[in-house]
Image (tube, rainbow, N blue to C red; front, side, top):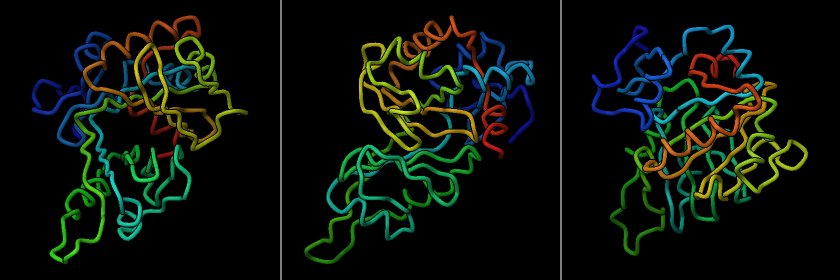
Length: 241
């Protein structure tokens, strides 16, 4: 990771909400060939906010997807651990998360370490074999540009989501690893619970064209809980990285 105050516009790849993050006073560092918001100027206050009600943008971190007959079998042959249940997030050895959205669809997001090693390896490894008939191994579904990726953290996150989403995300109803493919703020979203240590946390993914809209909706909904933006550094501290 490069020094603080890396300019997002100096990279070809940029977050879908980088202008908003700049306006909020984000300090950036380089990861994955782009600029990620490290913090917003007060790390100590931000850490407390993350425990209560925080919103982070992870859209520049690596992610990929695969879909179709044979997808899970091929991913398993590549060393991934994926259970039988759909709408379940499976943690990988390196901290990555395999979101099984359907019997034959998996969305893989990187760990908060941000190395991108597993998503990149899988993208490079996938190819049709020359055997006939071909063994079904699914097909790639690139997700880095199609979906934004936010993290919503803190004890007040379920109460905030109740204002914009009809799914009960309280811990007793929505445990670690649970996935909801639902509607939030009147748009289709994927919500996956992935706690950071003892802090409740949710990954929020949806159409990248609506990233600014969803960011603003969440900011508005979390205002009554004294929520605010947090950076990648805070997430990593909460996760113990």
